[in-house]
Length: 62
Image 1 (tube, one colour):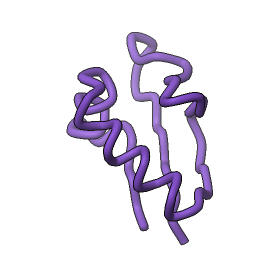
Image 2 (tube, one colour):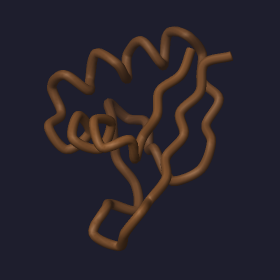
Image 3 (cartoon, helix red, strand yellow):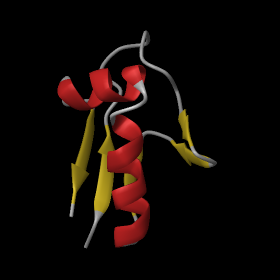
């Protein structure tokens, strides 16, 4: 099942991230494959999101 895990490890990280109309907040989010694909594509164009994924703050699985 595709999911996002968003772990805020410090207060400098955003409380939520807006990606093409989707609001991603800390916690576990179960997504459809289409949503996860969209999110993966957006990561390449969203420097803050890309940074958080590379730091392991946001984990995309599925």
